[in-house]
Length: 276
Image (cartoon, helix red, strand yellow):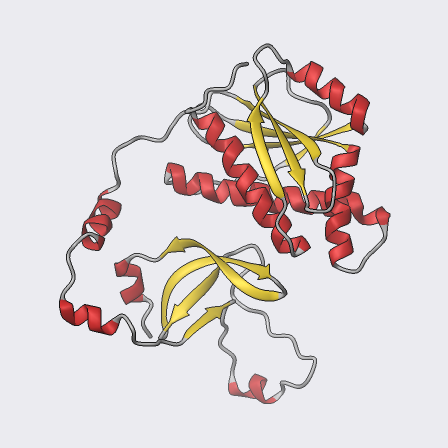
């Protein structure tokens, strides 16, 4: 199927490509160059898959379906050379040279990037999306086809195939009332007094979660004690400024330092409600 350069299927392909780069950077400590292109007109999924299998090893497919209008699904196909090289880069960054963990590591890459794609699609279509992916025994029968190449600075590019099946539809164009109100607020002119405050420094912290404990449990804490927080490992962390939650995002590693990639800016109403 010929790719539509402006359609929602293209959005799925490009958004996953960007999110994959983020995941690889956070796990490997360096960002690869990723390029996603629609395959030439007339190219078929079967022929493209056979070509990559012949040149780079057997294909391994992953399927991610989305409960959205048109029932879109993302299919990710990687030949053995591609998934083993990506996984090896991450294992090497962790100081591990055990090839037996490559398959599990590649699955972790897929699960993280596909999970981020589900959250991104949820924001785009303004709904909660729970779309766990799974390994697929074979390629889909068809779909809008893309080819992706990932290249770390000191390694040869590795190819992957993306197929978007279903009939994905763009979200409705009308803005949500709350979002329209927030945008109107943000566009209001501010006063000169506000300009004077722009240089004021505020404490910024990142919250991984919190919990309340009875005093008797606090007194029992010792080195090695584990405190369970109220947030699961796949939930976004909160960026707190002056005791007010202003954004949510994911933890990343930048040149050996921890950081937070912002995914959501908190609305004014939520910011006010977050004050203790």
